[in-house]
Length: 149
Image 1 (cartoon, rainbow, N blue to C red):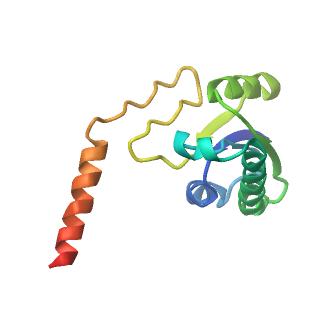
Image 2: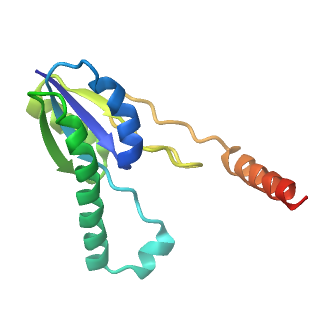
């Protein structure tokens, strides 16, 4: 049975990536690796530690409830759930040590202007384009001016 570790931070985005792989697939051992989105420093100042833990628990329950039924559609498939903290490269090394041969699938939603952390140590870090914010701002202002006419 093949083992696939899926790194996820948004359930809907991950479903779009994983669903085409499920059609006609043999039974697979899926490991859902939930990597919660980081809070910005502005939000982090005003939210207590207990509120963060409650939000994280609700977020993970919703994420697993969305993904797990889709992955169990293939008869004989197993689903394992993990909630992890960073660094993700260390998490992937621990998974490889525990399960042997593991395929890694990065199904995290990319954030505008923010480079994702690599999930493997051999994977080069994605370079952040210096044009991401100016292009987004220009596109937003252009749309606003178009709608104003």
